[in-house]
Length: 322
Image (cartoon, one colour):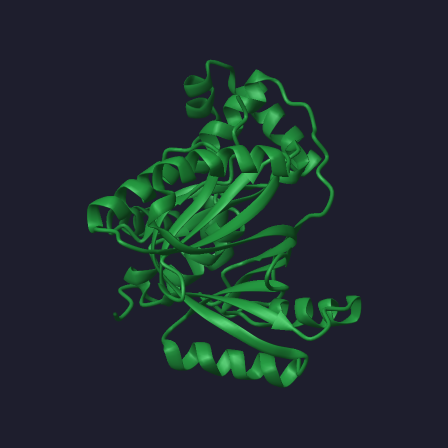
């Protein structure tokens, strides 16, 4: 599908990805257009459904959570049963991401849990209802990952990269901060006045707590979620197998990821494979060219599996806080 946006739209979307709370006045000055043009363009991007929501990126490890990724292959299902499975995950507050796939897997799910026992309890509940419909599954534990700015949208000078992971911190947060982290993931561009009204607080307190959470690293960034189909893009995920994923190789792997504009997310994990990457590309040809380049740069890559993300059903950076 061809994109329905132009170069200015791409630049606006990239800036909103870097900070969706930037004012229209500042954004206009940065891009050399009028504030009225920015207001109009953002409204059109929302009306067309290109911008799905203004979000925030939260580091769940600061709040004591690990992330676990599951991949499922179905058996003996119908569209009705598959919808029930998807709805079960979407309705679960411990689930961060749910997406339908094409390739080896039919569904991928990212879950929050504070430990493996908590995860086992969650999956036992799932299996008791839907276990008979699962032919195959894999899961891994996220060790650390990198979230990179959407530089496939426009030429970049210096890429924005957010890193989180390793040992959970388990910071303590109060009710106001909990309410903020619950409301902001779907309303990242809301004014402090509107946020205060929604969480029964004051704009001054809201601003203060948002700054505090940003300083602590709980809130990592204010971003934007896009409808990729409407901008002519495809979403690919690759699971990577290396011969020896040494510290030196990890550094080279991360360096490659950060240098590739189409690559927006990488995960170093513990499980059946060593790492995962997520790419936003124009078509299959572009994807496989990038993977060929990865093989060339990292000959230790002994293989990979490709998954096409056909539909995202849920995406939320907020773990279950209450």
